[in-house]
Length: 255
Ligand SMILES: [Zn+2]
Image (tube, rainbow, N blue to C red; front, side):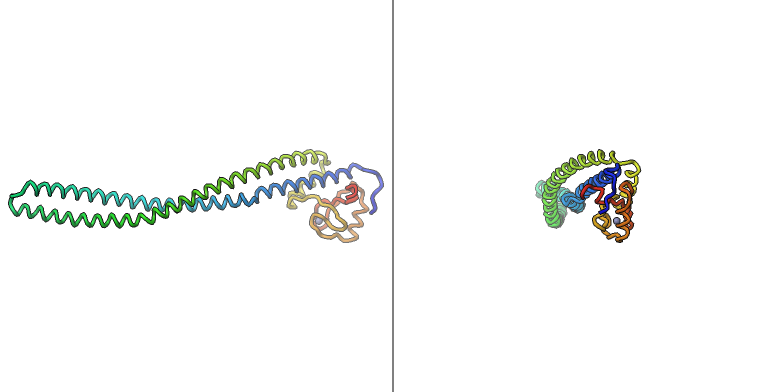
């Protein structure tokens, strides 16, 4: 390898620093990705959606159940009224023993009608109760399922916030190291790197490993590699294929 002559022009160190900054940026991006892609977070989001759906169903069931309860209480009020009316008539019958047969007959007819009406009301009440029963059972199932989901959700929330806290702690350290290292870069190189990084998926600088760009993993033509090797150490070299700043191994002190 034709390592140029002067020992350590400033740019040599700058390229090594640049790769260090790139490595830190990559590590930061990986941490952020890991945080966003936590399986626990995904499960928590899925769970929240299922809870919302189940709550909507439970609300519908509750509405149906409440409508039935209202109907039942109306039926009961009517039954109470019928029972009260019948009692009144029976009292009157009792008091009117020996009265004119026709009046008694009319009262007895009404009492018989009321008995029929009461029977009908009781049948209706029973029908409502029968309708209520499966609704109540289903609501109870929903409630126990929701309780299980709430437990799981609490577990996941605790797990996610624990992992988040660990990752955030690492991120704070990485960001601090990144800030210190980036401050050592020449301004023009830093700007160029930032521009490439923002356009090229977070990677602005790559190693030239043999004849291969470590950024796009493509092999450079032999002539191009040879040309690059003979450039001055402070020359900024970019990959023909991906445009990233290529850092030559010869500038990395033995890498
Ligand atoms: Zn490349």
